[in-house]
Amino acid sequence: MSCIYVNGTIKDMMENNLYNTHLFRAIEAYPWELEKAVEALNYALAYDPENVKALHLMAKVHYEQLGDYEAAKVYFERALASNIESPDLYPEYIRLLINNEDYEEAQKLIDFAKTLKGVGKAGIALTQGQLYESLAKYEEAEKTLKEAKQLALNDDFISFVDAMLSRLKKKRQAKANETKVAENEAKKVTEKQQKSWLQNRLNNLL
Image 1 (cartoon, rainbow, N blue to C red):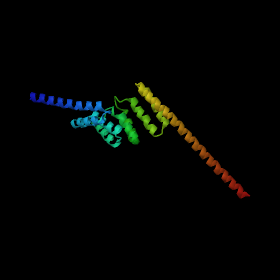
Image 2: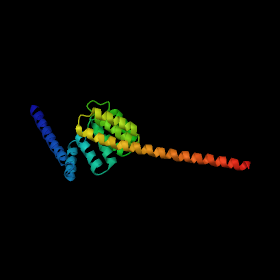
Image 3: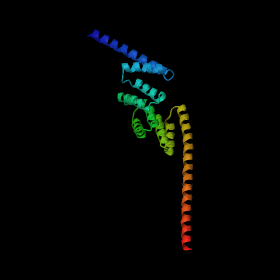
Image 4: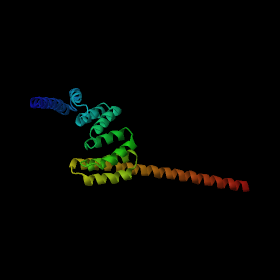
């Protein structure tokens, strides 16, 4: 019995090592050698169809390289089904949903991600700001991004957020200018209508 157990353990170890070899090759090849990366991922998933890291990387291949959002969503969903508390999945999956205009789904995922232990709070705040920006809620986006900066522990991340804040400021000013122009046009139309009404009234009295 002990011999069978040892042999079984050795076999499991060999399979795990082979799987890890394929996964490491995929990670090393992505994104510079996509063909090698995809081939290695297919082998890795053949050994372990529900491995979170392999599914995550396959989702990125479809999302970032092929622009196939629906296929990427399937891989992200499989990864979450395998481990719903895997914190690395959420920021990229949320961005995919935002880019695919699945705004309600993105908001639900953001709300859930905030409850997870170990998730990057700054990264989730960033996705919330990106969602607000996509919805043209610029003031909410600016407020959320400033919160993301306070949570950040990375200078590159802070620089990226600063660039977003600069872009949002321009968008907010442009939106304010458009609103002002529209209000002025509406005011001119109203004044013209009032003047026309008064002129007609006076003409009827003559």
